Length: 77
Image (cartoon, rainbow, N blue to C red; front, side, top):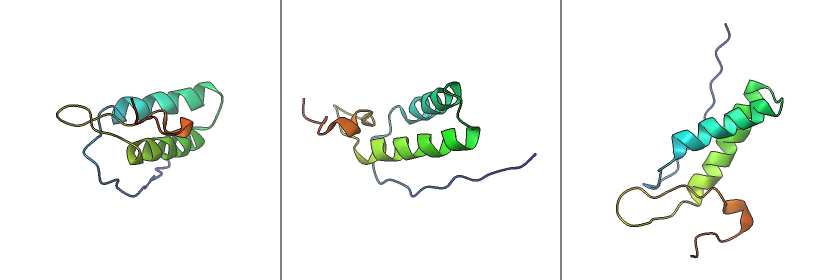
């Protein structure tokens, strides 16, 4: 069995709500589309990193990642 490491810079934010679900759903989606596991992980980590960079605060505690960052300024409600 070959072990592969996937590294990414840490994003300085407390708004991490939903990161695990987002990452696993993105990986599963790419695999369901027929992509390789390595491709799925790389693309999913890229998506999650961008979603974390665009995360926002809502109320108290950790806010959500921004799943819709690619549509423009989705932080304005």
